[in-house]
Image (tube, rainbow, N blue to C red; front, side, top):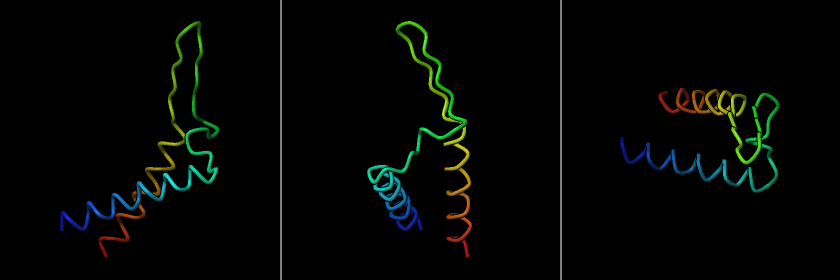
Length: 65
C-alpha cells in the first residue's frame, strides 16, 4: 500500500512539473499575493494552494475506490 502511494505521488509531482514546463501558469494565478518592498519579496500562493488541494483531494478520493 505504501509503495503504491509513493508511486502515485511521484507520478503526480512529475505530471505537475510537466504541465508547468508546457506553460501552465501554476504559481502565477490570480489570488496569489506578491509583496515587493525594497530588497525583500513576500509570496503567498493562496489560489495555487487551493487549486492543488482540490485536485489532490479528487485524486485521493478516486484512488480509495
